[in-house]
Image 1 (cartoon, protein in one colour):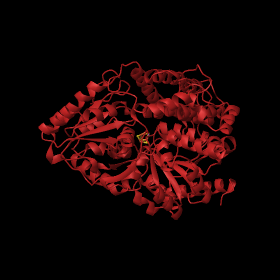
Image 2: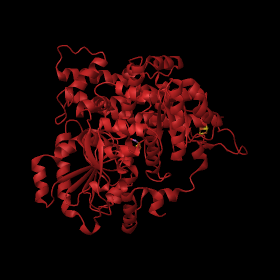
Image 3: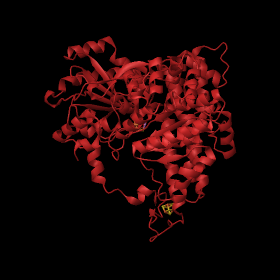
Image 4: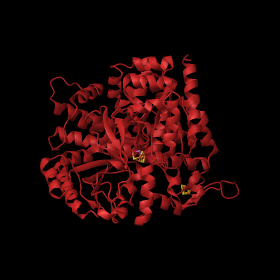
Length: 622
Ligand code: BF8
Ligand code: SF4
């Protein structure tokens, strides 16, 4: 297919042509090869939870209407959705656990290279967790914080710690519905249990537990990941940087950081600045070492260090196809197993770093808290040495970088507002800002690359709706220029004036996908400030191009937290009319929010604008 149909981005289009010329197979090629995709699976109507099956239900009502065990469409769709949530929640939460373990190692003095970057945040979180810090040194506070958070994964407590941040009305609702997340691992394990053959066959009951499993992610695992990352590596502050493949530098050793957890990438950042290694780079004829990010590891180091971002999910293969990359260092999640095959066409070295995530064709160099600092140095040196193997005739860096203004943690947003939520509340009350929307999530070859994100977001800001973003959506917006102060000119008059007064862009980057919890924290703080539940606020969320199970978990915790959520890609639920009705209609009466499915960004924007208008009216705002 012609690149113009596959992506809206210029670097993407140019690189797709190069990929063809270089004989590189991409995710789009493999997507075409899979068509037509299985209709049963698309509808959620296939089950292989046991080996009496696999089973499938005929959506036209002519063939079998029950699996071999007797499960009907509702049970099968609910079980499949439940397992997607469990996987997504597990992924974010296991990422959080790794950070807690490093925090513990730091406290024990067993993690050279790591440290507490933000003592203030450590103390704040410790107090929030009910830890008495008087007379304790920083290491001891860190140890106790790690102990309390470790317990959030098990079943020792009645609820995960950060549920205390949830507005009272919502906590009471969760208690009434019996969906307060207890332990993170517990909810995920229980979902796997319930979806085994012959356990939970009440689809409503199953889906309620799905919400609880997702809440264990949003107010548990992901929130732990974000908070501990901030403690270890610093709370992001507004910072200028750049995005697009143009951030690669022909004259430099280019190292790409890909995956999700900042634990490895932060060490690579440190090593790449060591004077002896920089000198080595000069010796091999490079002007220096250039780091660039991909996906959410990229977002982590972009937010905290201003490390430029090469691209999002669908750009990962194309980044290697520039021929300008000496090394890609990956941790885990969203790393296509095809990457090393692409790297084989060039000189690029591929390094995997987590025992949990090994890949064919990659060299495995395992990072642990105790060896990370030294290993990072070794790996960066290897990248430097690889510079001489670059094949100049294969190098093509397609465009110039695009400027972005990033680093908007909740703390940074509050600071931009002068330390209080009042200016934001006032702007919402006056209607200068009509509401706020989190536009988040992935790329998916089923949607023209970045088309959903950019068009939805442009329409929202035009209508005076502030956009906050994370994940691959944030990269799309950055490349479209929406993270520059000048982008305020694309906003409606009210939002434009606020942005100009505060010197912020109309699209605020709040981080990686685990950092979606920053949006939860902000929403909860706003709700508490005004004295209402989150569901009453003029807020919404959208995942225009999502692909991942993590996105399912995020969408479910958003809705269970009271935030209307629009999905641009249809989840595999259409096989059950009951479940579609529950998720898109009836659930609003239960948790005060619902899902909508709308691939057209203009129509999705309309749904969101209408929702925000209704919420404003209910609050008595014009
Ligand atoms: O956690 S947005 S494609 S990179 S899953 Fe993956 Fe999706 Fe990108 Fe980040 Ni999130
Ligand atoms: Fe078939 Fe039931 Fe087994 Fe699923 S659990 S594969 S529907 S028999």
